[in-house]
Length: 437
Image (cartoon, rainbow, N blue to C red; front, side, top):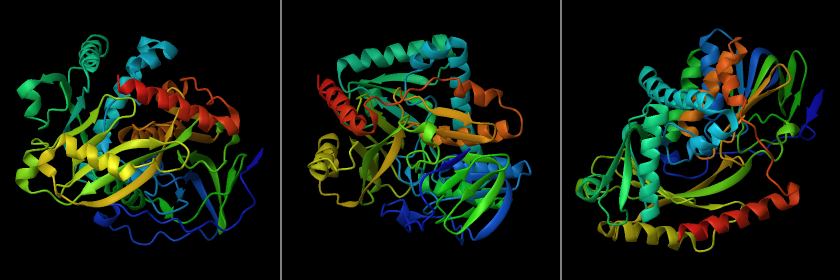
């Protein structure tokens, strides 16, 4: 079966957008020239974010001949622009997984999500990736009902998942971690943390190349000609491969029509202040934790390696920047941390993440030799690395763990191609109003 997105035409030259991450790259990859001509590989990986780079690394370490194709520059998407939070779990509550698959399978998925965090730390250490990995995370309540919900979540995770890394903080114990009066309580999670996402992604790519993978930037896959072997066509050449790994996430390009409508792109926005003094940093996040609040449309922040406040929030589903975005985000920082009055904002940027209808990740296979992972719903920094590892295991003939995730049912967003976005905007408006109650 041939699946064609569009006639092969030259792709635009996609370069990483301006951000503090781009201006603080510490990993030198060297040249990754566009694909030219015909090549043969065991596996063709499409997508140069964490999913694709992790898959390429694990496959190359097992001796597979791997060719990775990236439409822009490695780390172009959310892998190189996100908040950098490294968290166990999924973008949805585990109750969603329990309802779909049962408690036993949900426990397996939770355990693997913890493995994803440990895998991130192991890769950083083994490959000496300079990404400022730090531990400690705060899930902050904004209103009294959130406090009850956080306490219930802590108790349920201890009881049903044997997870004991969550501590409820209130009062002075909380102010020792985040110096603001904005939150009545927070869960501190010692097994979660944060890092520089672009340096981490580039570090995985460097490790994959050192293990033997071939990396090609500015080589958009225009067509997957399915079969055994499959053929992946770009403007400059073609890869013939026994297996294909699809890791394009928020940038699917129609390469697999069966997946249409199963993820939606959501734009999120971030800023980076000028570097703080040591005293200012100590009066914001004294222990260098990352934080996100408990709203549906949440805000999140952390300190960078050079002590900038990296702050993210707001959302758009229609490709248009929210009205008054700059003033809104600046006002939020001012309310949280008056001590930062007068500190300039050095960077502002945005990027797309892929969400699923139930916010659970969508893993699967199409036919016998095309694997995909997508829809991390804002939880991909650790989980995407695990997805790459699980797809490598499946290609090597050990698919049991991949199949646990792949068993999660997924539906298309309602409304068809014309109404999906308006309906999602309407639903999000409802939840934004609920956040205010």
